[in-house]
Picture 1: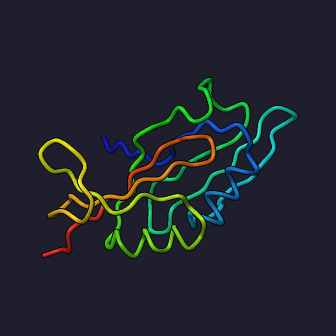
Picture 2 (picture 1 turned 120 degrees about the horizontal axis):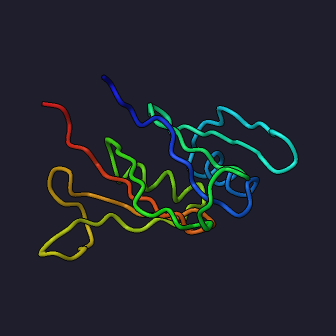
Length: 134
């Protein structure tokens, strides 16, 4: 039996603001924006190249806005991704790596180069660089 994670729900306080952030600043593709009555709206967005999407909206989850921490994107070039996010107005950290159980500035070895950002509600993301295929 195959099991795949294909959609993760993020709690947000303002659906339109979050949609603009993820679509216009982070660069996710808007797949769905549908209202299901007066209290339920579903907006599904997908990172370019990803098989997993996020869903934001109203009437979806009983979690406080901004409470999702630790979502992770994987990219081929973390420095280029950081530059793109910063150029779109995302408050993104410098490139960091883990060293001696603490974060240090600059790139690290394979799977050890990251940048971090949060959406307007505080849902927190890590962006990790994967090593080139051998």
